[in-house]
Image 1 (tube, rainbow, N blue to C red):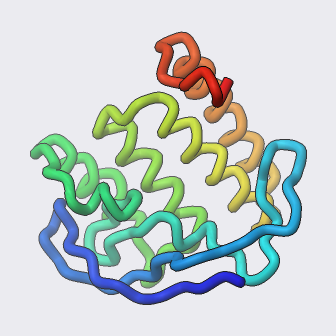
Image 2: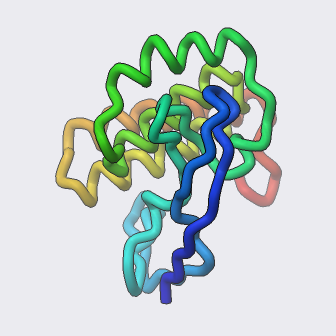
Amino acid sequence: MTTIFRTALNCPVCDKLFETEVVGSCGFADKDSDFCPRYWDANPLPSFVHCCPSCGFAGHEDDFEREVTSEMRERVRAKITPRLGKQPIPLDKWRFAVWCGEWAKRPSLDLGRMCMTASWCCRFLGEWREEQKYQKRAIRFLTAALKADEVRDEER
């Protein structure tokens, strides 16, 4: 069963406090060939990343606890804030999270996993071209992660 609860996060870019959904627990019945989980209940993928409704900074819960650079603030305000709607759709949350992860110079393994999850969100939304785009990006990041020895032996 998927359980989701609300929590408050403070945005490190614009310093606004906002409420968001966090996954408490979830289980899946099956996986697609690319490991995309098929959940028993509500699909929790959109709740694994969070997006500030004021500026658009996005990432995992721990990304909201990290300090951000002035360069990150400028990039978010220039590239993401103008694209914000009233409520970011799940794909936007993942798209923005990948951008913020790249700008924060997150490891390739993290970025590859984020791109793979973004591709799954695209699949559930019927956005086939976007799904393929994110799968290709995931391949590039995950290949770089292997070359950089970011992947533990038991995950290879």
